[in-house]
Image (cartoon, rainbow, N blue to C red; front, side):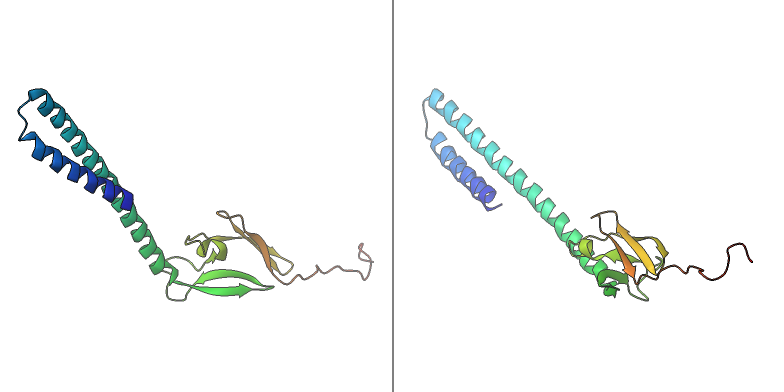
Length: 156
């Protein structure tokens, strides 16, 4: 961005210098050449200005995304799920009409909100999946299934 600013200022300075010399020229060929050079410098300054305007627009969008994320992330708190898996859950009273949910800690730390999907529970474990970063883990404590080992399977 600094380079574009310097280039633009240099082009404007050169254009002013050319303009000063054009008014004192008597030779039409030299004057026409100077006018062409002046037009080129003006175009260079306009291109530098356009690049700066685009860069400012990009920075404003980045700032807006950052400010939105800063506000959004205040709605969540870090939670540890056994045996040591971290996720962010929406704070009570901060749901904004959304159902209670968890978001991926990996994505949260990359300034992205990505829901953790509960793929189901069984035997004391819950499987969590983030479709953005690929996180796929189980939380909880494994409980082996009950197996009836007493008696006959035929009911006798």
